[in-house]
Image (cartoon, rainbow, N blue to C red; front, side, top):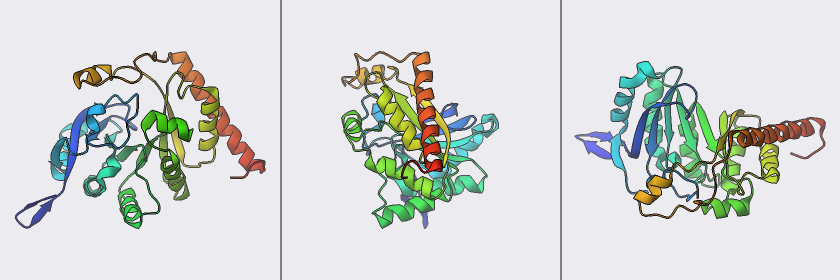
Amino acid sequence: MQKKGTVKIMEGRIHSIETFGTVDGPGVRYVIFVQGCPMRCQYCHNPDTWEINAGTLRSTDELIEDFEKYRPYLTNGGLTVTGGEPLLQMDFMIELFKKAKKKNIHTCIDSSGVVFNRNSQVFMDKLNELLKYTDLIMLDIKHIDDEEHKKLTGHTNENILDFARYLNEIDFPIWVRHVTVPGITYKTEYLQRVGAFLGELDNVKALDVLPYHTMGVPKYEALGMEYPLKDVPPLEKNEVAKARDIILYHMKKRKQELLTGKVNK
């Protein structure tokens, strides 16, 4: 945060901006990629967003002003903040979304939920304040198995799944994203478990099952980094459709079980 005279200027660390995003929430969207992420997902196609102290400082006013330039083209869309991990910059996010809602802009956060901590009152107070100005959260579930999640991302998934549960408790709408990686997440057992977990939630408004791809490889090469999954082939479209069907089937199955009292929630 900087001061201009007596006025405080809220700034965030920004990696880049996409002005015509079609896969980051409903409609066509203005997408802000923030800088900084604690996870190291092996298939991440934005490794240049990991470093927390990098990026360009940009003010909330500047970003809202830039959004307005493209607003006529953002059909049924709005503003999405992704990353990196947006919840690392909570003060900036609160200020940005406050200003967005004053202009009747649909707001969306694309988060892994990795920093969620319901035992921190400071974090929870800020999160609940942010949610007042947020219309939708897109939640990335990287892996349903905790040990496999640690291998894939370097972090446990316990707080991520707890984030999903918390948002369900307060009836906050989420879109769930799940990347299917051959030999890692694309296994029947894991897909069934994803479905069963989602079946315990009542706030899932959409499910995006995404195919693993290798489009991030050139970035790794440019950064002088070795791509961890270089020997893993992309997933075929029919396999992605199969994965989604498995998740949806077990999602519905768990809901039916809960309805009939056959399992404990």
